[in-house]
Image (cartoon, rainbow over all chains, first blue to last red):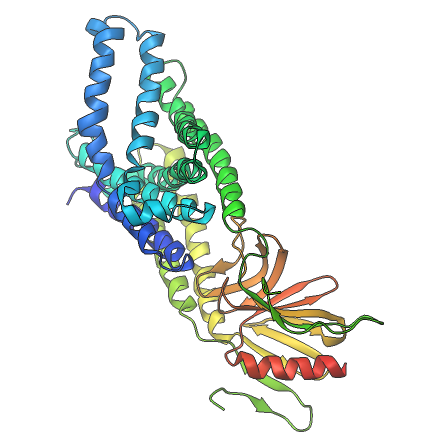
Length: 261
Length: 182
C-alpha cells in the first residue's frame, strides 16, 4: 500500500476517535452522524465536478494562455472558488428533512456543522491522498515522510467543522443571518487558504501556508468556543443541588432540578 | 450493598471506589499512538538527508515517548481512583496523588454535567485528574472516572472538586449527614 494511504489511515484513526468522543458527548445525535456520513464524499465530488471546471473557466477569462505571472484578478477569483463552493456543498446535509426541521437551536447547528465539516475534512484527506498517489515524486515515499500531511489534515478536519458550524448557525437563525453565516464561513475558509495561494503565486515564502494555518487555527478555536458557549450556555446542563451550607438566618433551599420552579 | 463500601468503626472512615470506566483503555490507545508516531519520526530521522531535520525528528520522537510513558502511567492511576469520607474530611485518591477536602469548608454539593473547555488539561474520555478548566464555572479539581457527565461537584470557598463514586446515592447520603453535623 502507498505510504500516503497509511498516513491517511492515521488521520482517520485520530479524527475518528475525536469524532466518536464528540458524538457520544452529544447524545449520539443521529442527524449529526448523518451529516458526517454525507460529508465524506463531498470533497471529491466538489473538486472533480465543480472547482476544477470553474477554475478552468475563470482561467480562460482572466488569464488566457497562462502567459506571464498570474494577474491579480485571477488570484483573487481563485482564492474565493474553494471557500464559496466548499462551504456551499457542506450544507448539503440540510436536504435531509428531519435534519433541516431540527435545525432550530444553536446546539443543533453546532452538532450538524461539526458533523458535516468533519466528514468533509476526512473525505478530503483521502481525496488528497489519492491525488498524491498519482505523483511520481511522492507516490513511493513511506508513510513517515507525510507527518506534515497528517498534522495539516487533522487541523483542516477541525477547521471544516467550525466553518460549517458558522454557516449552519446563520441558517438556524434565518433571514439575513443565513447569508451572513455562509459568507462568514467562506471568509474563514479564505483566511485558511490565503497562505498557500500567496506561496503558489510566489508572493510569499514557503512559511506562508504554515503561518496562515496557525493564525487561522487560533481564530477558528476562538470562533468554536464562542459557538459552543452559545450552544451550551452556563447552567444549561442538567444539574441537581444536593446540599447548600446554611448561612445564619437563611432557610435551607430544598433539593431541586435546575430549570424547575 | 453492591458496592465496596467499608466502614471502620474506630475511625468512621468510609471508602468509596470510583465508578468504572474505560478511561484506562483510551489512555493506552493514546500512548500507543504516541509510540507509533515516535517510531515514524525515528524512521524519518534515519532517512533524513539533513542533520537539522534528523535532530528535529529525534527530539520529536523523544517528546512523544515521554508523553506516551506519562499516558501509560495515567492509565494505571486511572484504575486507582477512590474516595475516603470521614466526619472531618473527604480525601480523593488517584495513584500517589491525594486531595484533602475539609467538610467544614464545603459550601455546596451538586451533581451536574460539566462543560468542556478547549484549554489543555489532564482530561480524557473516562478519566480526569487535577485542575481542569470547565466552561462557565472555571477550574475544577477533578479526581474522577468521568470527565463531563454526572459529576458530583463539591464546592468550598476557594475550590471546586469533581468526583464520581460508584454508589452515588449512598455516598451523597453519608456526605450530607456529615456536612449537616460539621
